[in-house]
Amino acid sequence: MRLLALQASSVFEQYGGIEYYLDDLWQLCVEMDHSVDVVTAHRKALTLEPRPYGVHPVRLRRRGWRAKLENRYSWLLWKTFFDRARATRPDFLVSTHVSLGPLVWSVSRLLGIPYLSNAYGIEVWGDMRIQDKAALKACAGILSISAWTQSRLTEQGFPVNSIHIVHPRLDSAFEHLPLVHRSLSGKLKLLSVSRLDACEQYKGQDEVLKALALLRERGIDCDYTIVGDGTDRPRLEALTQQLGLEGNVVFAGAVPSRADLAFYYRSHDVFILPSRFGRWEGKWRGEGFGIVYLEAAAFQLPSLAYNYGGVTDIVDNGLNGLLTRPDVHSLADAIAEMSTDRAANRQMGLNAYEKVNRRFQREAIAQELKWALASVSSSLLKAPRLGTGKAFQSPEPDGL
Image (cartoon, rainbow, N blue to C red):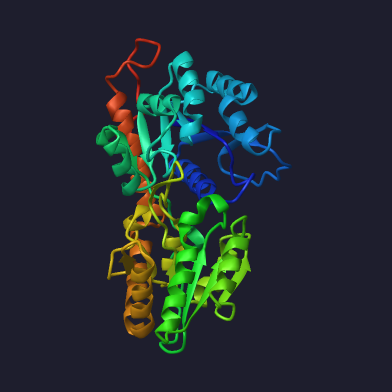
């Protein structure tokens, strides 16, 4: 099977959850003997490290909000994608973000090539632009990052049989790591890992700080490390000082790669990222999945989070972590429980380790991807190919 994807960014442009997810997805496709080419926008000097799939960067120059407009409406990006699609005639086009859907849809209509679309989280949970929603409805299949996002789409009228869950996978470097022997005494050490973006305050580090202040009033003292950097860091640092928690909270800054996170995962007791879910200030907020929960589990860390979003695909309450109601008092109660019952933490950590190495390792996610592509191909066998009036010819099932 041949795939041609359109991306707004890649691991060459920036390192983030979506970029990692797509990079893993394309590598899995190649391992399954599919051919993948990616047309991607870029706005800075790139060092193109070797990839098993083709990368075709398109130089764009706008910054800030103009960059988002340019991704949606760039003639150069569209033409590069169209020319490559016309030259290579892939079996599927792929829109890697709902905002790119109209560009991919237009190429699909012009060339008669069906297309797939990725769906992550807030961008498809509601309030989509009319053209984005229309393009998403017109695609041959949706690859959803989680059951949570799948459920949000079905609530908007998308047929459930067109939405196929392909989770992010645990990085191969984190599979089946040696067990970490943690102390069952001393202060509980909490860890958060995420980008500190002012537009992503829903991730909940401020909720943790408020919960720690409540616990101090009860005589429970915990340490908290925040890994990550961004425009929201000054607000969180100011809140830390306001609550008098300077001696308990460490801002570790950004970590350049997954491997560099190992030190922090090994030296803490609980991973905590209580992301909120909902619509406020005119936008949907929440966690579409959360690869960091997988990484924490690989180091036998139980996770503590609110009972919302993609984390519910990962954490089973009371088994490999705790899920609480979305309020600071419930969060404080859960931290207190984990602070006093360290043996339970250890068992939940071992359960998290077992699940992540069974459910989210390479072979398991490859199977999800295999069935998703096979299902979409099967549904198109008797359907007219777009713009041609001819039946779409799916690759042989064995090729999947």
